[in-house]
Length: 152
Image 1 (tube, helix red, strand yellow):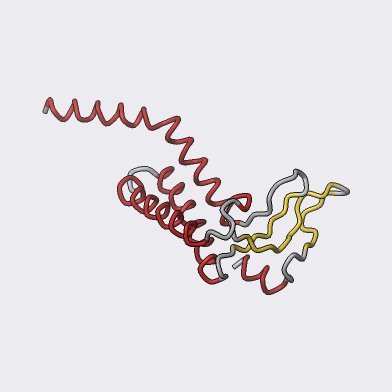
Image 2 (cartoon, helix red, strand yellow):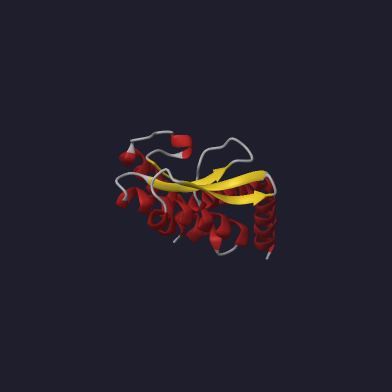
């Protein structure tokens, strides 16, 4: 919905102030079309990007089916990644390989991105954090449960 609003209300490359506090310029809305991935990597390689996205989405669906029911953290991390990937994939399919990007941080020098990218990034950080911090504890609980089940 945000991408549709941007495309409907901005000319390509048009930029408008979005978030300012006093003289501090934090963020602009800046409509661009990115034919690549993060930081425009793999620009113009639409088929490759679609295949990689599809594989990632399949992995997320697998994770949702096999682990998402038992763990809300894993469930929401995969839903966020899947939703963001789907949003960008739809763009790429219907916009000749391009994704609409519009969030331009002015506070720091950073690439222009979109809300779907935020979902992918935050979902991935949550997933990696969970794997690094809790996956060993989950395995220990499973082993302890199996050991208890074997005794009965």
